[in-house]
Length: 144
Image (cartoon, rainbow, N blue to C red; front, side, top):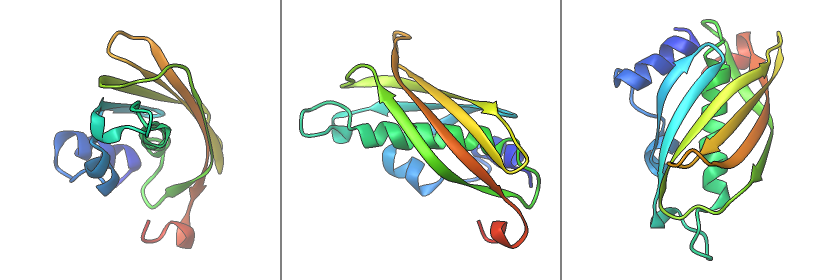
């Protein structure tokens, strides 16, 4: 199964969501080659000590969206790993519906760069993340 096919099965419910999606509470809502959208409900249980959404949660959501965008370009038998993740936070979030939109910036045979913008329910930019990913093939991709 290709990466795109796997994510499409997540959307339709033919495959269960990954454990991290269940733990945090996000879901993928759209995917196409090199693009993915994830929705997330920020709630009090996701708060940091100051009462706003914990930055690590936003990192998880953007990492998932970017990973799905990258994975949607993978062929059968390929996998990937994240080499680097960077995020900028632009405004605090309390309780809100967030939309993470990831897109491939620069695909490559082995290394690619993905970006993700996170918007609140009003369409305001909350955060922007970028990631460098590496495609794994053969024995490196086995059981991943």
